[in-house]
Amino acid sequence: MIVNPAAGGGRAGRALAGVEEALGDHGLEYRIAPTGGLAHARELAREAAAGGEVAVALGGDGLIGAVAGALKGPSGAFGMLPGGRGNDFARVLGIPLDPRAACRVLAEGVERALDLGEANGKTFISIASCGFDSDANRIANETRLVRGSLVYSYGALRALISWKPATFTLRVDGGEPRTLTGYTVAAANAGTYGGGMRMAPEASLQDGLLDVVMVEHMPKLRLLRLLPSVFTGEHIRRPEVHVLRGAEIELGADRPFTLYADGDPVAELPVTIRVLPGAIRAITPVDR
Image 1 (cartoon, rainbow, N blue to C red):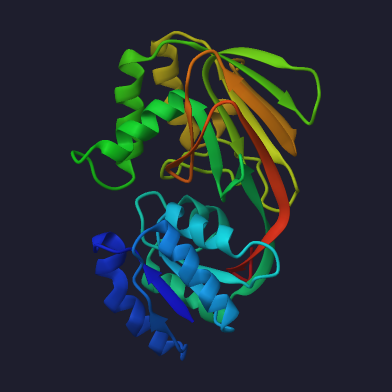
Image 2 (image 1 turned 45 degrees about the vertical axis):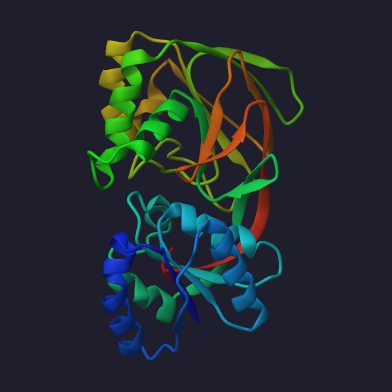
């Protein structure tokens, strides 16, 4: 077993001593391999799989997504120990957010085949989104004023101040083009992002489809009132929010936007986003 703690300390680094103790308590053999970045994490994951080990990512969604993407196909199963700010993929799978407690899943869990998302050839595990979300993600990644999952709410509030409506064009599964003027278009493999925001509450990791959530234009004050309901998933009942499902989405906009996925920039619009059904095998809780 190989554990990939994010380089430079942080929450994952601080949790490492407790994780090592918990792994020992469960009788699991392991070795530690600190990463030098996401590319290095992918390399370590592939080396672990080639050597018959289980790659386990100790970190946030970006690190977990990098390990998952490196192991797509028949490469091998992977595990995760949440150690980032949002930890949304773990939330969706029912893995404890305390990395020490999550070690029990590694010891007692089961392997499940899960879908993976892909945007212009780059894989992601949770949600890829753009527009208002592009600005909010950039602000959240740049700020040092706010820590933990609240940084995503901070990013959204800051982004709202200067936001101007954008016009998006999308085509789902080769169908007729659709045009939307508004805030955000998100393609969801899993249902949650931004530290617990249930952007696509009905998304499934095993249905071979992406849930496409579109938020059309509304006054900023109305959007501000809408934001808390994203944490419960009730926002999808609002008339300004539309949901489609499909296996492939072609997406463009009337001005440049960066597509973000798992908290990181992955592509510039226009972009083709698709699902890779059952592409990864993850160690998940028995009762999921």
